Length: 318
Ligand SMILES: Nc1nc2c(ncn2[C@@H]2O[C@H](COP(=O)(O)OP(=O)(O)OP(=O)(O)O)[C@@H](O)[C@H]2O)c(=O)[nH]1
Ligand SMILES: [Mg+2]
Image (cartoon, rainbow, N blue to C red; front, side):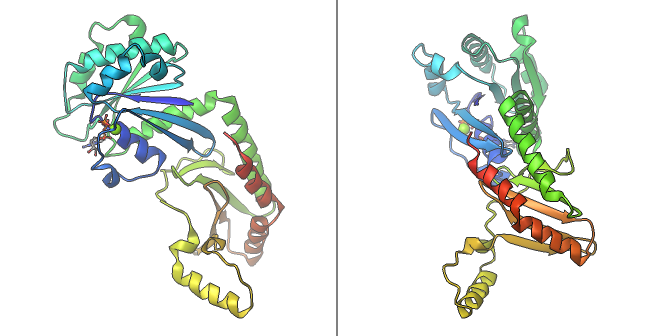
């Protein structure tokens, strides 16, 4: 699925992509270098849909190249989703020319695109003038184009830009039969896991920290901020003690990754977090703290249903 990210230099395109798809926080994208030409990156969004993001560096010299006769078809064809982003604090009437060309070639080479998302970024800045930028981009624009544009004032710094991009991509998931099938299958596997355990199960996608599916049905959660979910490497003290004990018992060949479950306890319940595969992380929340409930969850997490889930996620090809 080709997602085209386009717009003038410094608009925040790379920041948006990294914070949304890799779970980076804003501090990590403060000092990004300008993107050189087109940077293409693959992500599995929400654990079910493969994205091929074309992040087009916006410096003038690259723009000329993208619009040149030899390149335009490659860049603007086969797009599923197109996002045009500007820095609303850097009003520049020249952007209109770029925008016109972008729309012209996008609709020429990707006529299937129904909506173009325009993000007026950096509204967190006092000097941002998103209304003025909106006027510049829409004044005397051909009606056929206007109908297909969706403008949103956003901020990568404050998180509303990521929220909007996630909304846009979720809409693509819904239109994509294969992703919907995958989602249905995963939901079914989670429901199997739940049987007789008096617990709810939530499956997260590690790279973007988004929920893949849960036994609670639709469940809104802010993207999680775990950079890496490798329990063994997180808690090396526990690992080294564990390793020693295993050595005493003459069990060898342990890797830090063999520690793959964390158990939390609250007054009312147990929360178990376990690595599955392909970057998916499972969370089980018990309904009470009866010992039977705990052992039924442990059974589920070491049994057939869990194996099925793991196998399915492992074998998913995108
Ligand atoms: N204040 C503020 N700064 C932002 C926001 N989004 C991005 N930035 C900053 O803007 C600068 C440029 O961001 P990039 O993501 O590199 O912009 P780009 O569109 O990829 O630029 P090119 O690769 O040159 O086309 C970075 O220093 C970001 O930290 C925002 O919402 N608010
Ligand atoms: Mg960039």
